[in-house]
Structures are given as C-alpha cells and as structure tokens.
Image (tube, rainbow, N blue to C red):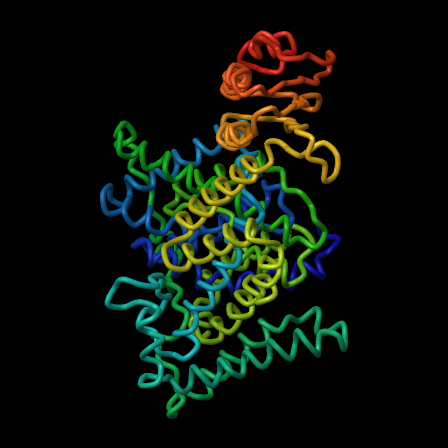
Length: 527
C-alpha cells in the first residue's frame, strides 16, 4: 500500500480539497449540522477506505441522498435519524452476506456513461455561481430549478452581481490548472509531485490575505466555512449520539431500508463507473464494498454523521490526479480529520471560486464533448439511453435519471430481442419457388410472439416453410402455442411445414407441444 505513496499522496491532497466543500455543502443541503458532513467524509476516507477492495474509489456524503436525508431529519428528528443510519449500515452488511453486490453489473454501459456525463454537467453548472462570486448559498446551491433561489437564477444574475475578487482568483486558478496539466506536468517530475490544484488553492489563500481591505476583498460568504472549536471539549461537543429508544418505530426501519437500498445502489453504480475510469482496469469486489459501506454507515450514525456512499466526484478527482492505491482515499480522510482540528482558520481562507475552478476541470473530464460524439457514433440503441440518463439527471435528479435510463435500456434490449428472435428468408437467391426458411434464435421468449406471428401470417398460400430450431435452446410455451395454431391454419392455406431439429426432420408435426416436449426446448415442461 505504501509502494506508490509518491502517487497517492498528491492525489489525496487533491481529493481532500475537493471533498472539504462537498462534505459541508451536502450536510447543509440535507439540513444536517455542517460537522456531520465532515464526520461522514472522515469515516468514508479512513474506515471505508481501509475495508474496501477498491483501489480508486473514495467514499463520503453523497448529494444523491440529500433529499432522502432532508425528509428523514424533518420527520424523525436528528437523533432518531441517526438510528436509521446505523440500521441502514447493518442492512448493507446483510446485503453483502447475501452477495447482492452483483446488482450494479446489470446496468448498461450507456446508462453508466450517461450517469458520469450528467454528474459532470451538474458539477459545472453548480460551480458557475461560485466561480463568479455571486452565489447566495456559501456551501453551494443543490437546486437547478424550481425554487426562488436556484443555480440558473444565480447564473442569470451574474452580470449585475459579479464578485471581482472571486472572479479574478478563479481565472488565475483556472490558468494554473490548465498550464499545469497541459504543459508543466510534462516538463519535470516536480510538477507531477506537486499537483496543480494544490498550487491553485495556495494562490487563492494568498490572494485572500493580500486583497483584504481593497476593492478585491472576498467576502466571508464566498469562503470555505469549517467549524472552529474553542477547546477539545467544544470539539467533542460537535458529535451527536443516536436515540435508540425509537428503534422499534416502523418509520425508522422504513427510513433505514431506504437509506441502505439507495446508498448501496449509488455505491454499486459508482463502483461500476470508477472501474471503467481506472487506467489499470482493476475490478472492485462488490460484496466487500457493501460490507465496507455498511461498516462506515454504522460508525457514522453512532457519532452523528450523515450516510456514506462511494462518490463519483471525489473518485474521479482521485483517478485523474494519478492515484495508484486506496492509500490516497485513506490519507484524504486523515487530512480532513487533521484539518478540522488543527487548521480550521486556514481552511476558512480558501475562496470557493478557486475550488469551483478545480471542480470545473473534474466536471469537464466527466462530460467531454467527445463522449457525446462517441455515443452518437455507436448508434441510437446506445445514444438514446445515454442522452435520456444525462438529461433527467441534470433536470430532475440522479436516481430518476438512472432509473429512467435503465428502463429505456431495457426497452431497447427488448426491441432488439423482438427484432432478432428469428431469421426468415427465401431459399436460394432471387428464386421465387415458394420455399421459405425460418431459423429461430437461441432463446425465444414471449416478447418475440408478435414478430413471429406477423411473419407467419404474412406467408402466402402454397408456401413450403422450413422451420429450423437446431440452435434453439429455449422456446417459450407461448411461442410453441403460436406454432401449433399456425400448423392448423397452414392446412387451410396449403402451407407445408418441415421442422428441422437436432433429432432430425419432421414433416407437418401434428402437435408442436408434444414435439418440443420431447425436444426439451421448453423449460415450462421440465423445470
């Protein structure tokens, strides 16, 4: 684990600076204490990172759970909500024992790419107000539409409310990041060790100090805000313990199961996505990941933190910063812990506009124009689920986007199955001798009924039909019934049927059901 510390340490610094404002922002968006977000980030880094088998994933509080957490805190109260977080962690461990980690593999690649792209677009949109220093919410606006204060309203108001100091240092930070990644990193090993985002953040702190008292001064509402404890007792006072007297409440258990299910699904999708982004293409053990997440949520709930999942923004920043092992995730957790204890005053000097510049780069790498071009070139069966996932994630939310993208992907798959259940052609090229051949696919289900029935009904009278089922291993009972009905209709239309199977050739079988029962093509008869 320490072999690649020269790669993991710089990456952990980048992830730390990305994670810090996100931990605070997600806590605020969830109506939880800001410190609860930092607790989740610390545990997600140190505890989950240590147990997880992922070498690139980073865990912490997730924006996708913010709405669920907000509603749960409002209905249960914070101490009772923490009980649900603990129970949710226990349920995730049960999921791990039941080996339910394979769920994430059933999501199409187009939906996963759509999820990554949609998140990238959201990252960019939500950071635009911070970049120009006009945002009203210091921890970030998590609403794109619908409220009096949302991201698009903030963007529209930029021309009349531009923050000069925030904008200037954001542009400087962006210049540093671009120069570092495109030019300097190729010049010397030093520029690989000291990462551009760290330099940009240091430049931001220096600018804040120098600009104080001038027209370029950055207001406190546009800086990172970490709680500053007066003493060790005040630091401990920021932790909250759950009220286990409500453990018998059905509402607590419903909330716990909801947290466990959504957190597990988000984690597994993130695992699938980060494994695709991993340059070394390592495969994360998903059941172990559920165990790690469950353990983290139990501990987070016990000490007052909000729920934890593996998160794509921090994981992407980790990968793009050149990490090699999970030490980067673990070290970033220690950085979060040390920072809130030792240097909260220094952290509170970091302009949010500088962090916005860092996140712009992360968002762009997730939502590159080349991704849209590649998905378009892959054909409509890939592009439609992809673009639907992107649009719904951006204009609705993450879970809706994934769900509808998956539904569209299933429909496309069923359509593909519908079109490819069989192959029908004339015998011989350009020969109109009345001979037709239908070859059934390896698996034919009830979804294929309509297209097969349409083809059979369209056969002209006096046709000689050869039905080839040699490659067919599964034939649904509904389809067999269609074939049997057709056999009786075929007599009236003078259609001759020759059935070619592994057992030989049968002319005009009297009962397709009996024939396929002997062939063992239908599982309904033999399961």
